[in-house]
Length: 310
Ligand code: SF4
Image (tube, rainbow, N blue to C red; front, side):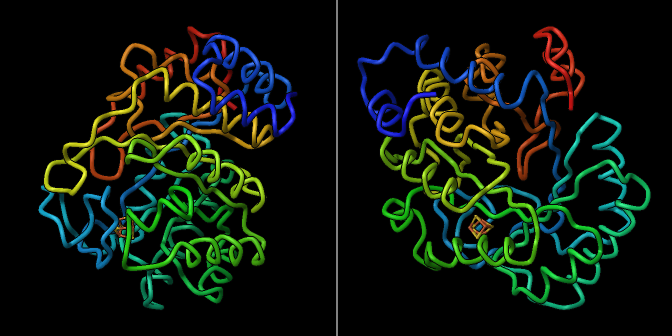
């Protein structure tokens, strides 16, 4: 394993051959994760109408992105989505809601009822919730219902975050993660790339997540959506994406590194290389506001690579 200083040098330098960097990351993945792959799937349980102004997000009410907008789904629909995720071999199911935070006790009760039913009917499926910066009392209620993980992304470095969002501070996101940890929940937290940030911002995010003791790290790559301020953003080249995945594996060697939104559109034919860049998981099925590809194609890809679904 290279030291932190070596990882920084290797990642930040354009002179590092990609194949060398991926080789080290792949060795590290095998050492800590063997050939086991974790598959995640999510349900967009409450969509759009968000008060916040995150420039990459189609769910902000301030932008004109063409997306479905709806209030919180009933518990039975969330449970149905979990069953479909499990049938597609997902090992972790995420309940995701738009907005800075879920703040009504009724909504939390509805989500807790869904979690309880999912854990009763599909006990092996890990259950995660991404509900914004909710208070600790709500986290406790969800943990008691059986929630395994809380998901909340810092998204990028503290410095760059100010350019992406002006309606809430970075510190609020970090505090939410720390609160969930104090409540005994596993933490899933990562970011989105291709916003115009530099490599040093991605590295700063990886170090922040390491310091927070995050166990699962979703990596998203911007799929520019018409109507958002980043609709014309230049996509990251596939090789830069692979280099970034490798850096996350090396900074967080024991974490689950998962490639989520933007995989198909940004990596195209190189998407199977995510595992040789150090990823140990990926999202299958649909994304929050965009369609994914058929889970059958992803399952076949994993089988063809000789990897095992955890
Ligand atoms: S990322 Fe979350 S907080 Fe930001 S606009 Fe989208 S839904 Fe709202």
